[in-house]
Length: 522
Image (cartoon, rainbow, N blue to C red; front, side, top):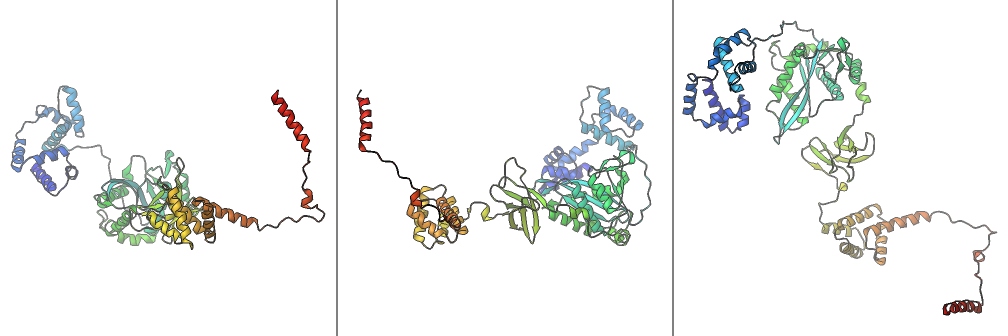
């Protein structure tokens, strides 16, 4: 009957458009099973299922042996049964799944539960209000809007008395600074700080258990001292000692995250907080039979108040860093923001600091350094926010760019002639030449007309010559402002300082030339 029901489920999901892999995951079967059931008609499935009760199984000859092993060792696994059979009968050829199914049937028929050496548990009394919170980390893989897998990381806090929960997510592994920031957020969410917090032996919190003398990481030790709570560290491989938080981790994965599409980190955290308000902290708890939110309203009064200022955060650098990509952009909240050409340098660190102020994204070379770019924040996603000054202006055609440059000159005839010459001499770099001209116009608004006339007169057909000419004139203007040197009254006249060259008679030169001529004749 179970197999017939599975057959119906597989065909229903297939008709609804689910892929074979998705059907296998949903029903907990392998894809080969899905393919097998889809190839069969309903009549064929009924005939096949009817033969299962009478069909002889490959392990039937070993039935008594398998049964004796399971009765003697109830906790024996199917894998171990397979190994013992192949050890006793080396020529036995059988698949893992066949052994698992056979062992399951034997257990069901003879009522042999798989008893394990379970740890003995006893119910513990509820802890007083405000005494304890438990903390743990988790990981979950979700699908984004493009259907790609995204690995997410989260931290969970729960107050042990009320079961009031707080969750925060990241799209990268947690650092100690992240952990401390999330602690602060959780304390504000809870409305106070418990006396004791229980942790697993996470590398962010503790370096070593040290036989009870726990060695904490430097930053977390300083934070613990600042906030003044006690710390309880669980033993290794002992999740049962913090069962409340283990259940919450599973609850977050299965009730909130499972089957949910990941849009971006900000929206994901917003949805999670909304889920806590709607479900996680509002539903009646299975153990306490109370709503965590209602119990928390009372427990909140027993928590130590949270101070408004936390010195660790105030002394730390509030800036966030981003990596500069080779196309001179950074990514922030699913958008791309441009940087000036040349910001990215091969084999360099390529890190910049960002901050958000007044709905603008400010990008700096260091936390308090030079501003590289300032962009308005984009509320959408997948957008490129680009400044015209950061690259060549491809939005305009060359013709429109020329007209824009010419319109800024009074003598537009000379400007047109100059730009036409540039087009002939620099066909591949005409846009670069026009950009140099625009830079000259912007920076030297009172000089470019005169410089253009000089360039046309002297036939200097280059925007670089135009720029250099203006710079030279600017240099001469600043140099001429210096006072001339005044000669003293006793100084000789400049005319008297010129020496007169000695003169000789013409016969002297003729004798010299004659001597040379005679030498040549000989």
